Image 1 (cartoon, rainbow, N blue to C red):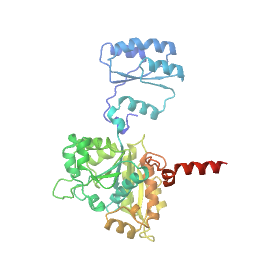
Image 2 (cartoon, rainbow, N blue to C red):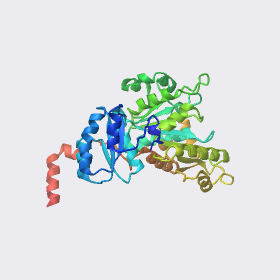
Image 3 (cartoon, rainbow, N blue to C red):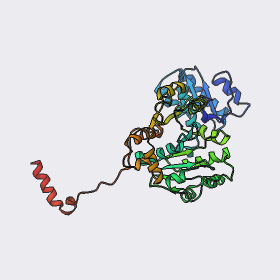
Length: 387
């Protein structure tokens, strides 16, 4: 559990013994913010031991108990007595992780949108194109607010692809991450449509391309508080800032092409990242430009076999469709003949969304013209139909 990315800042200590040992420990030393105790005591003994434990601990110490009894009545009694969570044995790591996160989470983090990060396995893999179109698809499919952040300060092309620059770029936003409240964000994010907002990159090779890990974490946290999804288009580098974003991401999408170099890099990325995501969705691998060189490229089957996991989606090589959309500053889903391309993109958007199915905001029901103009006639017709 402690290897999970969300607990990297935890400083755990371990002590042998049950509740009695904890009482003795914290009579002479300050208790931790979170106390997890495994006990084999019976229900009556357990309840009786809570009072002396609470007297020994600080008032703001949270308690998770792990016990042998799976009893609803005991659970209710313990929570009523102030225990934050009771977990029966045998214990599942994921359940314990969820309990710890629920107890320790900042209340402000409960509104955090889902963070989805996109990175290319090789140059020219089309990671930015995938990031752009998935961000558009998320807003279209689920009718929710999406913010796309271009973090490739030197060579980012989100502004070109959408034919739109945000009022302030991502580098400027990063330099004042502590000021990004709701009103400030509304001023600096460019709106592509009602659901999709853009924070574009400066596209300036004259400035440093790396970014401060702490600042980017703060900026993304504030962006996530104001959107259902935040998508980051990452540069193809492996510095501390990129690794910090990937470590904080709910979903990671690696875009590769069917070449040997891209295969090697995709395998390396997935192995490194998945090792740190034992309690998260594994990295999703997209095979892009499939079929461009049908006779010489690595097959999807061999690609997946070498990477060690199934490909999430395969995007066919359709240069005319993508080029036409790019030249018009539009996404492929807005093109009239993009069915073969939009289907895998919609599939990927649904998978990374964290939601099931397609949702729309409820629209007010509109009455028909006849019902507004001739209500009496409509009622009469309805009565005749029933008769």
